[in-house]
Image (cartoon, rainbow, N blue to C red):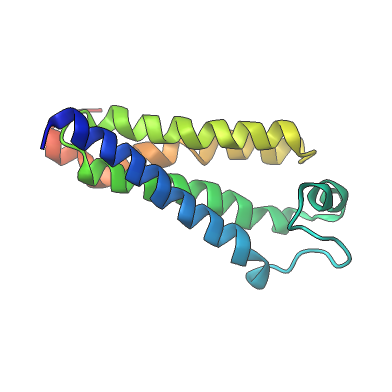
Amino acid sequence: MNKFVRNALAVLVGLVGGSIINMLIVNYGGVIIPTPEGFDFSTMEGLKEGMQQMQPKHFLMPFLAHALGTFVGASICVTIAKSSRRNLAMLIALGFFTGGFINVMMLPSPLWFSVVDLSLAYFPMAFLAWIFFGKKKDGDRY
């Protein structure tokens, strides 16, 4: 298979795989850490209303969704990719970071969460995925 096609397919499959992980954690995280009562967190309006009632523990699952979604997506990508694995992992991170940034702009989340989420959940996780799954394949260096 052509290197470009394989790398493009790796990015596509990585984005889809990471998105599935992200959505599973977001959708089922409330089972582990129940959300505050009386709010519908399945809609954007409900999220905006209920955000003020959320405690720091309620932000753990969204952070894990973003971090693990990015990590899994980048891991899939660098495993499938034929070359430029570090750059492709960062491309996955950029895709998820863009979604995270849009969420920060749309939802009134606390500043501490926005900073932690945007600085730790995306590019560092993609870099770790590259270290664990792609670095040895290319002989890349830090």
